[in-house]
Image 1 (cartoon, rainbow, N blue to C red):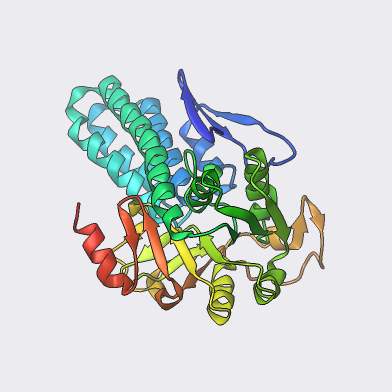
Image 2: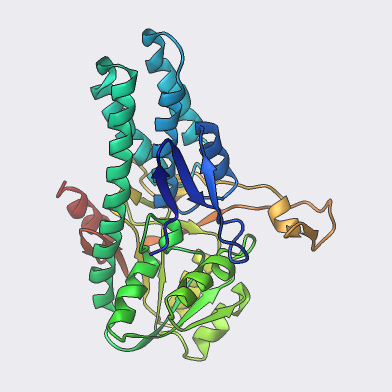
Length: 345
């Protein structure tokens, strides 16, 4: 299995996703600022993986601390804010940082060296748990695929977006093992091409049949009867089931609804945000205009044209036929199902 992140000795290594598929390179991150930069610049990406990267990153920050013992607590919160501000839409980031905050506060009187060891262990636990959750999600989700099917997906919700196996691609992987996958339609996913660069690469690594299309071909492929269901990941799910995911997901949901094609979301419990009532309240990250103006450093338009570059959009809950998480499958009415699922603890 691909390792998108791992710790070795005193350093954290990340698979630099900006270089894929041309080059497989692990970037060494020796300081907290290295992981802040990696998250901001999409060297690591995907909601679950961002959270784990931040957990390792804030551990490095505590290891770097050189002040007086009384200063370590405010220093922790300064570092926590630094990581929290890297990608505002993915709630898994906040979830991971809150979990690290809990173990930090529980161990704060044990001395810096002990605090670091405890935080390192917690980050490692989170990494292992993420892989297991994804495998469970995959097994549960594949049950929604009743026959050999052609699946459409967007962006990358696979191993590269998690610590292993994947969310939406985890469902596809589990279904493929049972001979339920005829083909996976992958949209390019402009402007950063995560579908073309990452998802295609992952699927081809696993010998899963894949066909790449541009984003604006999706509705036509559906109209031709070539898609049996759509499976996507998520970066944040509101209390009512509205879902934030990579820009273009909403368009897929609209097209799927128009063609009576099931639309499924796969995401871990850490992606649910019961404190957000609806998708209208989810903060949407806007990224640098360069991502739209250029591809691989080459201008594809006028270099000074005004650009609007939201990284995510919101799919309303009424367009979602099921949400797959590690605790089960939630079907409409989604708000009731989400409440019940979260109440299980």
